[in-house]
Length: 389
Length: 45
Image (cartoon, each protein chain N blue to C red):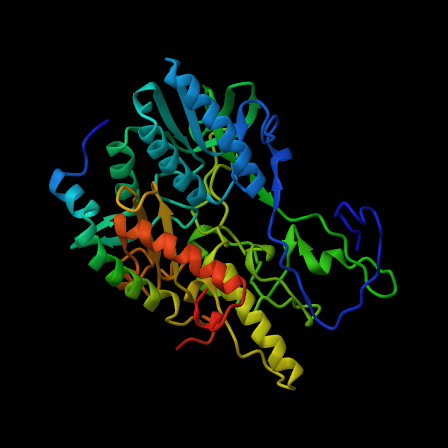
């Protein structure tokens, strides 16, 4: 391993291990989109704290200019044809819209959502049918309602391939090459593996047994068509099949395939979201990997703790503006994350009781409460382990 | 901008008293989903 922190930068060290958990998360692959680099070409990111802080300073500058009469166009969404994490961009666009209202400059801005999703509300999960109050609606209808209500325009099926100063170039599913100008953009990059090379103790290259971009685990990687995909393809223990003491929970594992239906443009360019694994699934899979290692150390032969994304629920509370009385949040839960079309054939692969959407002030309070709860948990304060992932 | 959320619905969404009860209900409902367990799929009956 090579140190990257300032004090020991460049120093190399060999570390032996009995168990290895690869929980690196993704590499933010800005280099996969020409010209997309946070802070250049008026395009920003919110994928790290420093990126988000940088983006806020740029947005704040623009707000000040808008107060002086400048009309501005704000572009938010995905910055690559195969990006994931649409939820983060969705949350950000609603917060930006609310922030413009708070500064009383909303009428000066045109806000545009640009995404590789085929429909609004796909979120890389093939969309969902959800219960909303006493109604049942599709996620695209719910997001469309929110965007229209807030005056946000949208461009879908867009694979952004080049960024120039204030211009995003993209190809759409119709195979048309278009561009969109902007004064401020926040675009989520493609995520990729870190490009690790792996060697055994005899210095033999074992990269092929461990990595396929991300780390190979107990998934079924047999190439299949969308119609043949099943929840059984998804990993349960996140254990590498060749090296039983190596695990990759969270976004570090190589998914067997996407969740959304793959789509290609008329020119053959793949434009569809990659599967999301961040947030709650990362926490759950990391915990079950730790529990399995504990069991193995205690002498158990089998891995009893399992957590497939096809048998796991997830909750996403998207902040849509803050303030104890003015805030809003869009709460969406889904069960399971990967739709099980055999088990739930009439509800688009999801259990409706556990797949619902809610909009309102309560969602904001809940987001705030979770924020403090997770910080409490991270600090391992008394009874931290009672707080779920 | 097209008004897609009615005034009465918006009042319901933003009224702190109504939303306080919604907050409790939502917390419990999400807790059931989040802490409600997970498992494998290959040997599921």
